[in-house]
Image 1: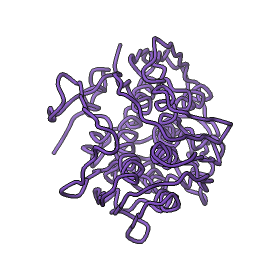
Image 2: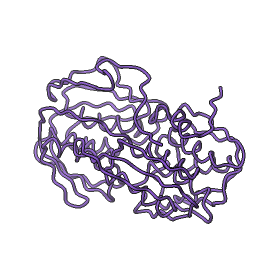
Image 3: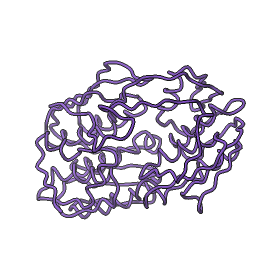
Image 4: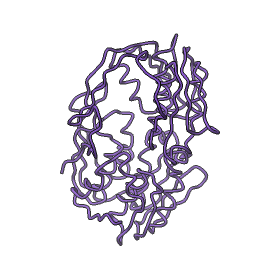
Length: 379
């Protein structure tokens, strides 16, 4: 069985047959928006846009939905101020009011690992005087530096320290690969059903694939094959062999940043594995699209499983799910995780707020159905 790809609900201006064309004029070509820029549910969009707009000579207002409006933004606003931009938040949360200016490169040591903050500062550093360096406390995904490097930017990497200097590229053409975090839900569904699945056209960036190592420890056999490269990103396929039995595991605190988006679905696999599965140092889950730590505990219990949050650690007791009704809380990854976990529950289950899945995986339910899952959309 093969999956992957995207589903478009409409065709925005500038998009034709899944292709988006952008005619750029450099940073000097940016113009002041006539209204606020709505980032919806996307913290990545808000933080990366803040880095780009920090160099623009006008004021922009970045807003989002109710969930995004609760997420911490001082972690990106603070260093952008140090570089010379004026950035205002509301008690540390959106909306972000960004007034750009002439930026100076800085060296910023992040207190918490965040690829979004790192990416924002590197994008700002592309137009700053001097060099900009970001030092991470732990490795995070490296999409921004890979793209900049592929475009010819003077990227410097030294372990957990990455730097950039002023640079202007001349345009590019690339195909956006499938999201490995979205593929994780299909892999988990195959593992719970004992199916064999191949997902093609997936991004195979090594900083995004640590969850495959965790899956291996849990008894899931997964193989990857690189078929090419797009803008510095390896692209290929992920093959899932039939899984006989799941095993519990322990995800250490230093691993957590590398699987932060996959924790919800890994936790649901843990509910069906014998023994206890632990996710240590998972405090960052509290400031995602929802408090995912609390949401996972509540949802697993509502579905007849056993889970608890011990300080910042998430512990899942295996033994399976009985079935029940769980709420996604409007969080796309939580909605998809509860759905996948429920595929192997003893009795039918209901996931409230399933529409949230469209935030990152339009067509998620239809894709699971194509894999043989019995899912009914109600309401």
